Length: 272
Image (cartoon, rainbow, N blue to C red; front, side, top):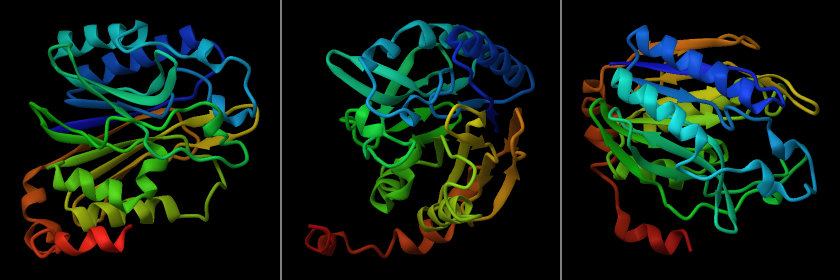
């Protein structure tokens, strides 16, 4: 199958951002992509760069809602799966959420970011409620997919949970800025997760300059051997395409060795 990581900038004009995203989604679908993924908060400014927001709920929307409705039409028309990321409002709670839209236009489910960080220009605890949906894996016509939203990818427990649940490819909507971490660390971390867990990883990053941050782009895909098999440019708006052969999952070291030889009866005491 073919996947597409849509790496695009966002302005303060949410309608304009959404229009750009819809255009890119149609382009990717017509190019033969089966699964499309957008970056974290793919159609709106990165709100957490600003501390102490007033009434942040005014920025959020429901799922289903205007964004998911718009992409559901494309998914159904072209028979593709689409992974979004948006600021979700559910009652009094606000989440960093990735709804997964099935190829028939229905919503398979929503992954909500579990781990919420707080440091300079990433004041996410001012905006997000910790996710309450666990680490779901979605069965699609193109394989079993998991989602690790940005900060969650730093937690080996979360990435392993997706493997145990049967994920064959894990998509990572991210908002990673230039200079945020030492050069190459993002890539090394995600390559290691792919190798240790025996699945493909596909990280889709924001790009572009915003008031307090410049997002790097550099979206990439790793195979279950931990090798980078496709990579987007730095600071560029583009669609990164990658052909993925899921038969590599069952042939991985993790499937043949690491997951086979686990000792889960020991781990609960270690991790208390």
